[in-house]
Image 1: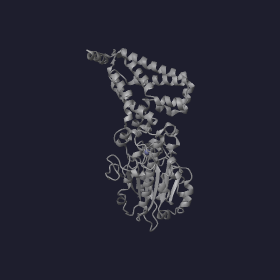
Image 2: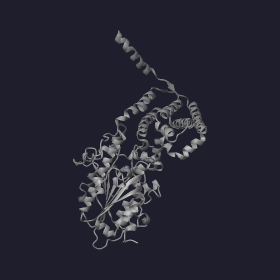
Image 3: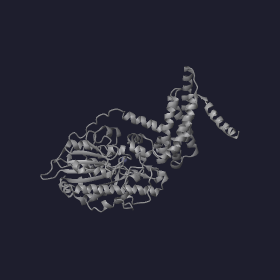
Image 4: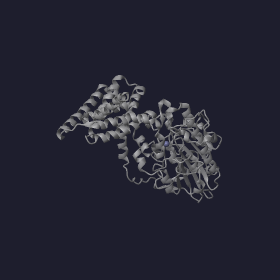
Length: 554
Ligand SMILES: [Zn+2]
């Protein structure tokens, strides 16, 4: 009997759940969902308003009412008796992911970040799928979705439904306006001084950003890139001059602050520091704070100084201009592709290589980019540029970016879940990955020193930096206008073989002086054109870092 008595309440609650099928109107559902989003899924918004903006209670109330009413209004536009459940299911699920990543890494879901997510390769994505997601998924998606499907949506005659919906939409607009008027001055100051906060309002942020990205680049075959520098041609080499070879190492997520050559207290670049023919540029600014922004930008003539993302993404790159002028181009990739910068040019992905010394089934260490390289660049009289696109310090799995021999700063953070590690552990892993990039660059330079068929040079620059917990920020991708210097200051080094310096009549002492001045990704386009002595109308001499130090050119 005791057993039966114990079972009954349980069975009772089970049938109660099965019987629980309350009827609600679609409008009430839209409002409830909006309140749920505002309360449960917008931690980062409220935290930023309280901690960074130091909003007072009146402003918080105004933002709350405004956000709830506005999101309910938007839901009111798309939810019907038939669409409500599937659409809200999708929104609960996507919002749970969004809320988790925003809170964990403090990211803003603007169009650049959404592009970033869409272009991430499956391995990177799987590194971000971590067990810490379970609880937020349960609380923010599974539970509300279960409740949602228990509801019955009230049916009304067509005319009555239309009237009620119109009244609801008007009511939400009035409520939003009322919320805004309640603290109008502070709210307009917020909109002026902290524009980026709108990218914290979830789920509107990712829905709007996603629509913007899809409108700018509709799915389907990409349009051909518009030509630039159609007049480009190389000045003929002096008699007896060997072909030029430039290895351009495109780094990933290395910040200047942790770069030994830039004065970091830890020597994270011992091998480069031991070479006296490497020129270091300690004050370089990146174009963007993400690969998606920086890579197309730094290969574009428009750059940051004339920044126009649509124009950059629709036009050819530096590499197309070089190829047109007669320079042979090869892009070797250990990352997520070249972002159309090498469209139609020779491209080789190394990410699926199987060298057991450098690769596991998912990934290869960056030295894979050097494997078999010499065979790919046998001298044939032509000038060449080889872009090596590193995996570099791509987070959050810094500990997977270097072989065991480079685990020199300890203890390390041996998980993607940065929240489970101390700041010091995270920094240690990050610095070990920098050590490995130092080693990789030193090996690349050695390879060029031993390549007698060319006069060669190497340029290394990172695409953007990284936050390692400063001001609670992790990873990168903060909107450029408010990005901290950790995300925008990047290392850059150059190396020239004696033959290359001689051919260009390059004065290295002079270049070391120039290297101390502020520079940016914008300098790369003209500097690299200059290295190959390519003449074209889009070459901007004043941005060429070498020009003032070459005695061949006026
Ligand atoms: Zn990147």
